Image 1 (spheres, one colour):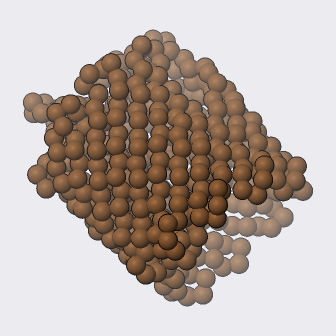
Image 2 (cartoon, helix red, strand yellow):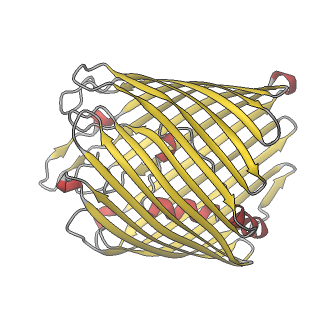
Image 3 (cartoon, helix red, strand yellow):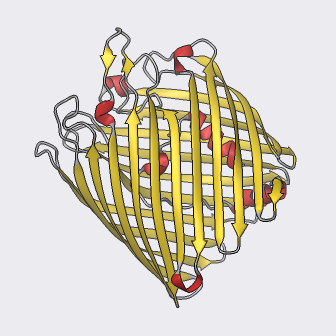
Length: 415
């Protein structure tokens, strides 16, 4: 299921860069599907004691009703092939887990949209006992922008390629009922230049940036069902160009503070909620500084051992190079169902609405997502996968308004 979700979401419109959004991610919690996943998880290949690899392969075919995410609604079929492996290592206090995945994404007629993507991630951990736990996370992504994003150049002849490299060092220490965490991270992005439909040069170097982020948090466990936490985050954005192509300096610094609680109301119902403040100060006086409330809530309800419902709402901030816009404040709310129909058959349905406020202008977009995905396990590690999805962007900016329907069916094999 892990591989199916990862491959199909990237193919069908979930940005591969989403993990870098400046928000504390809300966890996935789907016990209805975890039962099926645990039952069908492949054994992997044990290279040596404590060292295991799990290779996987996906082959899918699909249909896209609006390939370029415009009002022209150009439709086409596509194929998606992906291959990769998971790596797990545990030896005393030292651990490592990672993954490498490459994908080939080809359209039948709209060959300008073809993509070859690569994602690699590794987490090295060391548990020093009384001194605490140390983790080093490294990530490399070589991928492409998706059509329909507000920052995409509508006139580009192909999706814009980019690379993202990141490193993050995390220290965690637990003393009695208190847990303290400190981290420092660096993210660097680089976007490829491309050509427009009129064969003119499009410079994307003004989107390149480096981001430093420092974070400190502390949590207190009142009991096994209730805990409180507080978190502070400081970020520095340094864009590679002194001015973007519209003449704006995009460099900025930001702070984010939040307090929250995790509460298991019953064994079948738990809530994770936080509220806080965020601010971003831009070096360019023409860009509006951002100072607002942030929040996030996730409610997980295990209706039965086979059915799980998740409600969520959150606010986060997106980077942009749209003229006069300092940042995009995005509010998102949604609901997801997960259901085990048969011992080897699971499906999930989700609806999400996102409101995007382009700070400094009157532009406000609404992005709706609705989707159903399913996996039927023929045997341990071998399954048939399916996903149907609809995306609608409603905006007064006509070139960015579109709707898109996508369907995907395939086979997944993991050893």
